[in-house]
Image 1 (cartoon, rainbow, N blue to C red):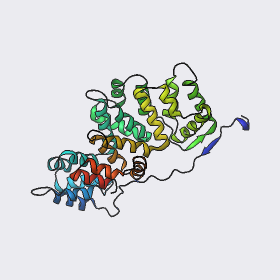
Image 2 (image 1 turned 60 degrees about the horizontal axis):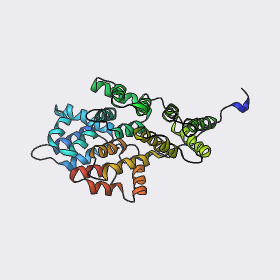
Image 3 (image 1 turned 135 degrees about the vertical axis):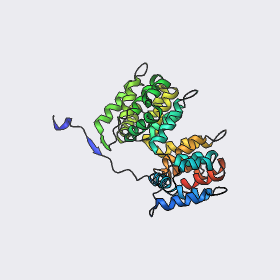
Image 4 (image 1 turned 120 degrees about the vertical axis):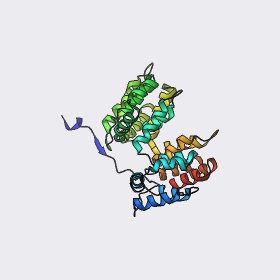
Length: 331
């Protein structure tokens, strides 16, 4: 191979560190926290403030340790006690906080595919934003709980190009490195152009192959070169070439590549605006992102909607449920 034909590889600089709003408690004693929770639920009435104060200031790993300590110390089940002592959206939020992430995601994905109609936006949001390295654990949790595979349930509940995209995302073959290849990016940008705008009819499989399997760092380069080749953004091409859930999924992948916190801020805005609150979406987004990048999501929310996420939550929820969510987002 001549020197000229070697692929141009470049290592992207480190991305800025994401900013979580929930951190592990530095001086953590699970048995002391268990005792506080026991006291909070003893006798007549419940001290919700104590429950919020403990659980929103511990990492998920620490909360799971508290469950074990509580169950061992008091020979009872903490989760069952929460179920009998708490109610409504506050109870659902606390239950979500006490669930290991793979199981929590499995439950949400099962909800999205079961019952009347499919909640496509939940499938898209989760499968576009979880790390591909997490999907195996989610699949395992799904199979363990529902005795079916996530793949088979999604295939049974979706169709066409949208189904193909979701199956590719579930099969978790995306490269997660930060190394990029300039020549490959140019070739992929041209492949996308030829598969869409340059031909009569769209070759959906090319979009699937590139957008579901290349790393985010590589896709950023691909999108840059697409702009150069076509004279406009990849988003405009998707808008013209696709429709329905397939279009939504492809645009969501692109938004996540460009700026995942901005994509998630948009999902949060949808959950709190309009007629009534979609509490399921609101809970899921806060619980799953508070230990990852909620600080970044809040900044994006403020920038895009000229309102803080905290104010949006205050205007759309109440009581202990509201207090708990505000603490989780660092307010």
